[in-house]
Length: 372
Image (cartoon, rainbow, N blue to C red):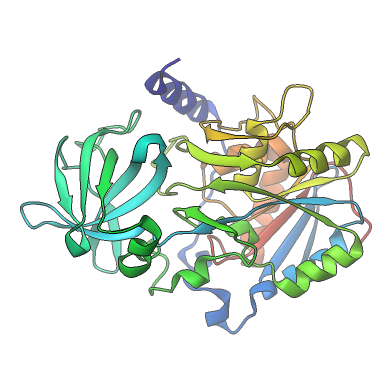
């Protein structure tokens, strides 16, 4: 099956889902890090829900240990966030932002073009194949072909297969000239340190794997002393600015043998495997077979987790709050069911929880209730 056909098939499947739909009030979009609101990282709110009987508990993230048991395995994505946005300029002088999304083999990148509009950006669709964009310090980005599956419904593509010509290595170049990707609900620019988890080990994500942002070294120490285990993997995230009903793009993952052993042993022993974020689920599901055995591996995954496919690798998830009709909600529905999501998202809206990467968190304990 070629990429174009797979992308179309995935989009059609998402379109068939009557995923959770709701109005997200602007005041519930977290526009700044919790630190700017006078909170520590782990003082964001935590909604804990039990899928077996739709019970919801409101807490703070720093009290996470109250809801976990010895032997629980937390699967964390240790990918670090890049300064993935760069100022770019077309030959005619048009100013753009180039967003690095996914690094493919042979030095190829999936990139997104966006046009600055005041304090935010919007998709830019007027580029042409073969066009070369000027980047800071004499660097260039050449646009070869539109990314397969990216629609031209607004007159052109915003995603491109591209190659970069840089004066020095990527990490050094992005440290000098890049900045974090941000969207309109984030009102100010924040250094990339605000977009990192404390356990990041390898830079490569276009946008922060944000479900793990609230962890602190002190909380991790308390959890380990309680007998909670941490199982690391890598999934380098692409851009999150998906169009309606658009499946996620391919992303690089690496799941080491020790993590596969921890996950398999926990499931075999009847203990909970809790994914920290949708990125951890995507990586795990990419290497978990139909019998529920997780294998080590690495590569680029195009997997989209839907209720029809189901989830084989985890029994619970720690995640942020997601926008209406997103593919993330389809994944949560596969874990907890649509009715449970209706209950919990209704509760989050009523209680004023905050959305997005700087917002609050939701712990879904789908199969059993932990001893609090």
